[in-house]
Length: 299
Image (cartoon, rainbow, N blue to C red):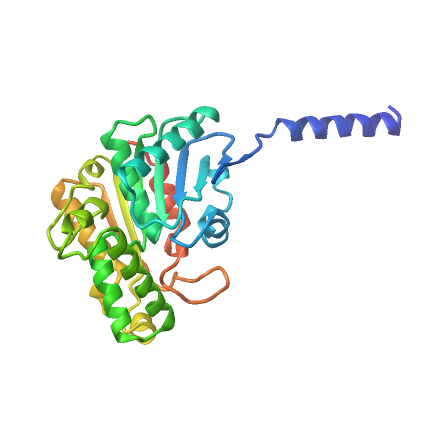
């Protein structure tokens, strides 16, 4: 065999092996990015925080790296600037998911929905709606990452942040929330029904309207209540934090009948992608635990 023939056979073998390896499929569409795992075992749908977008989720949620190698298809949605969903918005997003799954031949099984901050509110509201309406995209589990699940408590916390005037970011966010909620829902003690309708859970009146269907599936609540950081930077107690709202929601779910709900408290995991310490972060989610939770079946 000549040297030329040898290299020809070697090159053909290499190319043949390379082409036979399953490849990740990346699809970008209207306000979504889909990464299809070659051998799909699960689908993870994620919602960003209020001012964030798909690129922010990709940058901040480090657990996304190489999830396709675990057999997990990821669908990142750009649905933002929302702390709650109207009934029409639930239908619109449900229809969008149906189209994405159908057009890309995704399996309607082992589907998980998660969100960070306000995205956690959206994830819980949408998951409950999908289960309630028996949609084809039926979640097996849903999780929220440091989400303000009780909108009445969020409104009251915003009032407190503005009054305390400790940090300009907290004051600006507080003023924004107060103005938004009063314009769209009114003041809680004058229109509590709107807060019941739009909150995943309302502590003051134990409103579980938007949790009932979630007893059928696995749920997780991630938080990092670093009280030293909160006291120093925001002068907040535990009752002021999203962690408290999430713990109360978790307990309400348990009382409603859920036996597959988890309240996960982390320590020193909250760092932004730029290295800044902040307990309000995507990265309090631990990758190996999340993957194991998604891939276990019949639990």
